[in-house]
Length: 181
Image (cartoon, rainbow, N blue to C red):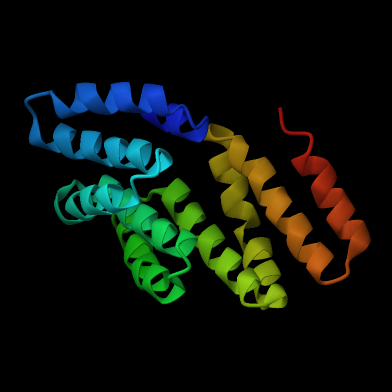
């Protein structure tokens, strides 16, 4: 459904799914619809509108979509170069996605990948690589349902290995990443 459309960056399908969910007479479903609507309009460049919708979902949705919305808020701020703001959202998203709450492994993976990316951007390539290596078991589990993240993860590994001058390791990780269908 919607997650698949999002992973494929199919904005039209995402808009259609969000429209259906928004028009169901169930409040929880409307919040899920707002989440997917926010993702779709973010892809169309309407960042402020997406942030507003995600804040609403982050405040009002059931816990699993609250975690996803908070992670997305952090990711948008990260893309805007507002690293401190992004880092403010990530611990909250991890708490909401934790095993004690909804046990949302994909959201936990996304948050941790974002944190690793921030470390890389500020020049902490060793820290970024250590984070990525620690994520390997989580990637294996998430990739069973979402194979895209297996390849994405290896691309991130290749970048960090290359930054650290580990050419053979970078080539090995890159060969996995480019094998993605």
